[in-house]
Length: 423
Ligand code: ATP
Ligand code: MG
Image 1 (cartoon, protein in one colour):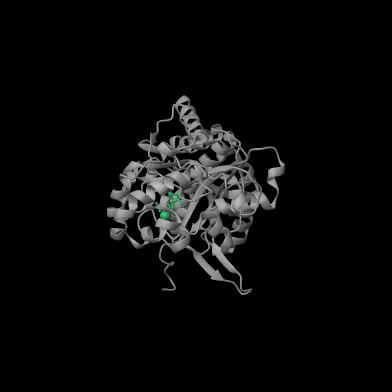
Image 2: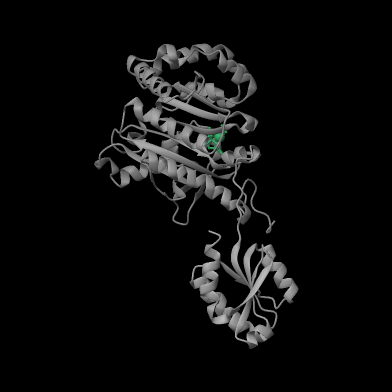
């Protein structure tokens, strides 16, 4: 128990870190191209923020939050997503006072009491963006394009982009009534979540994962017929710009973000070969959210991507670059009497910027050479008794198996030059 991480969490080991950094670097690079700036918000917030910001008829809020009372009797929740926090920060720091849009991105851990399986964890990581203060469909198209660009840059093919419009507070009531008329005769046979959401938020019935209810949802009246002129025009604008950008998409009328503050555009990107956990990115517009959490009437759009799912996808397609980590020099010092001299040289090499290691365990010459090989050292610097008596050390090029004697005092300058030849 004490030597096992909690269920649904996992360590990211040194051997995996380069993969994470590689993916994150692509995200940061493309965010810079698109003008998005990084924000880092706290890992926990007041519970109320998520209840308002995600909505209390959602699975996340009803079943998945890590909520606790802190020692000051406050209800605190580990963030299950980052949009609510980003919007909170937007209000708190009066970012609306700057010229719109405010374009933010984040990368970090999120927490949900999900059922752990491949691609689904209780602590997982999301990369995401938020763009606030612009109503134009151009920002929706830009957000979607940013997501697609990152996934393509990483080399992922077989991406499936689905988009929809969920309307707004003007056109949704009409759809809501139609949905209730459609589901009412079937309600008896539906799951308890659906029953309880039927009155509160029937749009969420379209999102049910229970197979029977899911099939039923496929035949439900589509929102598209109910869209008001403004929402229809906005949706057409998004589609037109995506087409102009050469992005393939499918309109899926069952794709929802079922809360009143989510409006107009909703989208999801699936990486089909991932199977059950194929959603790598989800997002949409939230024109009522800033106001809902107490800010001004400012519109927004954003998305989040699951880092673990992207890494799984890249791994399965062999799209992760090979990382050769190695060091510049390993100091081999078989006689402990010479250790101090070897130690000082190691420090000097590191100060000169060279990746340097040495032996801590008084191992034999042979074992130290083996360690140098294991660490992928470019050079071994051997502090042997005989050479040292002459004021020298042996410099061995590990790959070429050649060696020369050099003055111990010149070790740093010579190694610097030698290492540069390989860069
Ligand atoms: P799902 O239907 O798979 O539960 P979701 O609708 O809950 O997804 P969002 O809230 O839209 O997911 O989050 C955006 C992305 O974050 C998802 O597309 C997915 O890639 C990732 N994600 C969500 N929950 C998890 C989790 N428990 N573990 C790993 N990744 C996750
Ligand atoms: Mg979920």
